[in-house]
Structures are given as structure tokens and as C-alpha cells.
Image 1: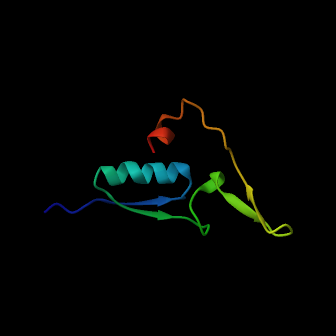
Image 2: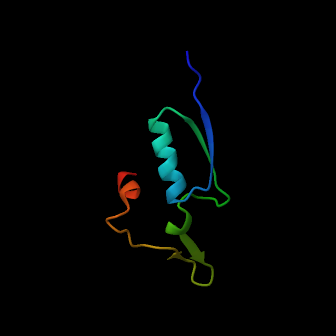
Length: 72
């Protein structure tokens, strides 16, 4: 039996997660390393500690040209 190729992706933003999905579809063994406590990169939230409320960070507009994002 052929052993799976192993890949480490540094960064769990949209690009890293999209790449991981593509590689998993190609039967790679994938590990994502992310320094934050959650995935999403700049398309995630942070907490406003004064208000104790989530605040969106990063871009929240996705253009039709983002083929890989929409496939993800």
C-alpha cells in the first residue's frame, strides 16, 4: 500500500484551509499549524474587551474572481 504524502500548512486562514481541502481531496495527510486559537485568519472575529462583544476583522467582501474560495 502506498504511503500518503504528508504536508504541513503554516497558517489557518482562508488560503491555508482552502489548500488543505484541495490536498485532502488528493489523498495527502495534512496538518495545519495556526498560532491563534481558531481558524479563519483575517476573516474571523476578535473580542472587544470593554464591551465584551465580537468585532469582525479583515475583509468581508468576496469577489466573483475568487474561484478557489468559492470552490472551498
